Length: 365
Ligand SMILES: Nc1ncnc2c1ncn2[C@@H]1O[C@H](COP(=O)(O)OP(=O)(O)O)[C@@H](O)[C@H]1O
Ligand SMILES: [Mg+2]
Image (tube, rainbow, N blue to C red; front, side, top):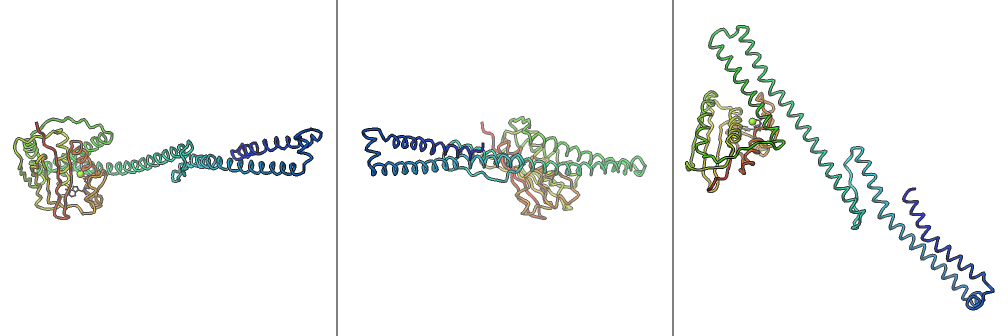
């Protein structure tokens, strides 16, 4: 039976049962004409008889009104929210989360139930939206990876064929072909590393090995290593260290190397000048050290600058260029720097160059 009918039955019960009982009593009394005392007075006195009928009518009217008030109150407090909730459940079952449950203003169980339902709907909506976003990002990532892996594989195949077919017929040419194959394989290796690492940070599984490191010594070695690589790209590397030689920070050397490599990798990739220059400067803040990595490459538009540390973000120009990339390099940088308790930000002028700033807290005894 629907709640509405049950309520009508309750209404009937509230109003009819007392009315019927009262009427029976009244009729019985009126019929007992031969009774003495009060009953004689009641039946023989017309005024009293009228009065009792009037009173009976008034009581019936009051009962009916109270019944209506009670039943409509219960109907409004229970049936309306229950109806809303069942509609809501049906909507959710059909995958529609774009509705809202009206939470009663009262402070009872029904209001509590509606509030919980609304909370559940909002949470479900958020999760669904996040899943869709993740799915889109993953799709984008897969298409980027496919593109980025395909480009070097195609070159490697081409140059290897050149060697096999004897197109590279002089030792110089063979050297050049082999070097290109080596560089392309390196590009792939870097990309695969980036992706493996990314899968790790996405699920918070980066194994950090924090130790105390002497930042000057660390960057001296870093620059030595980078120097040769930069030479092969025809880029000048400038290194300026304004730090006290004893300055220490707490960091994971391997992950810090990843940070520097990702930033320098971008500077090399987006270099568009014949005379490329990359400068690394170490500066002293009071409690912090600042690492500035500046290039004179093609720079980043102001509209893109706030987003370059977002995962998968690549400027339109990068996406439309032949330069591969997954748009996760700088998001990895940000993640690692923040896990070190540091900060990272960028400044850039289109066509002039880009500077990436890294700030770390100094280690104090
Ligand atoms: N040094 C730079 N010079 C010019 N553009 C840069 C530089 N570093 C980053 N960018 C821009 O920021 C975007 C995001 O960088 P990143 O996260 O490393 O992704 P990816 O290099 O895979 O495209 C790049 O696509 C590029 O447009
Ligand atoms: Mg990059």
